[in-house]
Length: 259
Image 1 (cartoon, one colour):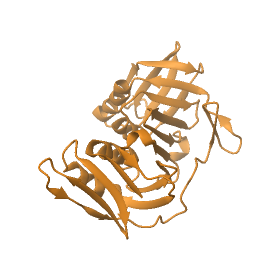
Image 2 (cartoon, rainbow, N blue to C red):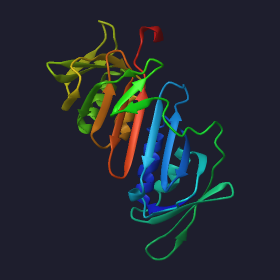
Image 3 (cartoon, helix red, strand yellow):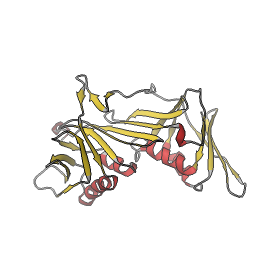
Image 4 (cartoon, rainbow, N blue to C red):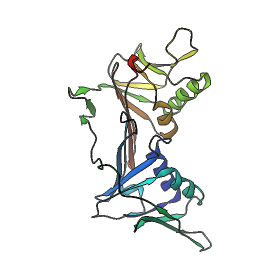
């Protein structure tokens, strides 16, 4: 596995793979000149897909299929100490990833960080189908046909408002063809904050679903328009995309059985 990219792009990639530590151990695959990673979160309920196209890199090896697993937090600590703009070569040798670069004055640097063979079978595709842009989930292939584009700054505010009042509950509803989010525990005596979110309803007219784990982590990681495909009391597929990458996170809805 070998590719070349700038320091800021490698840091960006590792942060996307981690999703604010939802995935502390990352399985990364090189295939057909692209890097991708599909993983279930430790509880098995949430899932993340990340893909980085050729345009993301200065150079990337083609014609090779290789998967490795590594502790992403350790890699991030090392990479964040390197200067922005430094061109880095990532190459697997033995049981180490060699990350080599040079400072502007020509001094070399070459961290060698351990990786391992993936402990579980490497996922090569999502566990659900996406047809015409609509995820189909479960054995019944239920369509997540309510699609909303959310301003990324407002999405980050959702998590901040929840932090202010110490809650991890987020209720998404559509009211008068607008997305409204309530942050707050689900009891009448609990503090809450309800607010309209800058967004565009792409499809669907109704929504009433509660989410918990995953929203804060997504808000901390995404930096582009947040698209969500969901439905009332259904899971949600949150994703962002660009010419260079795609990041999607699948999270389940909160149910009363979880209490």
